Length: 317
Image (cartoon, rainbow, N blue to C red; front, top):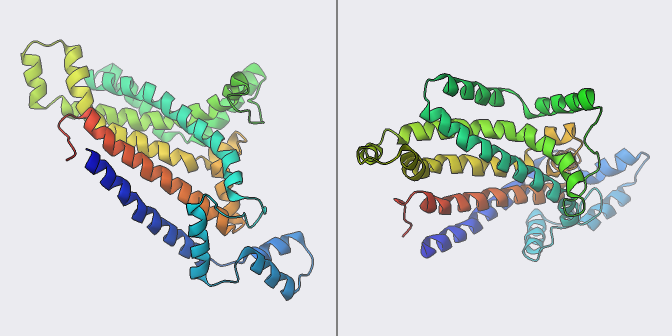
């Protein structure tokens, strides 16, 4: 197990390096010039000498391979560079928004998991009954309803029924938990509903498949209680695809809440992603892509390790 863990950890390095090279090259192939965009938006005429001096200040006058070297060496020491648009450190711009997006993603994951596992299990145990059909309708509705539209319905319902809307200013949970939750619980519910629907349907499908296995029939033939058969034998072996879905959905939420953040007026990573792409802020886009890539790789790594915990048949040697 230790050898497998070290091997998988070392494989992260070439993966991240490949992502870094790909995003760096693709951004340089995009049309547009960040320096010209900045000065044109400010209005007025700008001399070529001023544009050249600004490019030199941002390091855009160097060869591409040298720009890539500067960026990678900065990453290794925790310096992601300076935003080409705001002029502030990239790590600071991301840090102020990452806390919000992370909390929404974690809350949505917890809510979705707490609902998906019991609902998917009940639907599998009562297959083709009215309970199963009711849960299926509830889950399909979660897949069909866009999260941003559900978010608008939540805000409209709160406004019409209670004459109240969530706070517009983000407050960290360690400063005022009540105010923090009163703002972020609603986007977490809107996003978690679809999240729950995907996990619940996957749970139902995998449990139905596992319940047909020979060892389940053997356990029932030995006279074990149905609760033990489902909880101890079926659930653990059925969790592998569910864990994968939950992990991937969580990683997606880190940078995929663009429209939902707009609906709830949340200044998170998703909104920052859109703003930096439209402004051609290469440095910020590179850091954000690397951040999302790191999240995906780390979560996939954790999911692989959890396989051996939930399924005793899997042993990494």
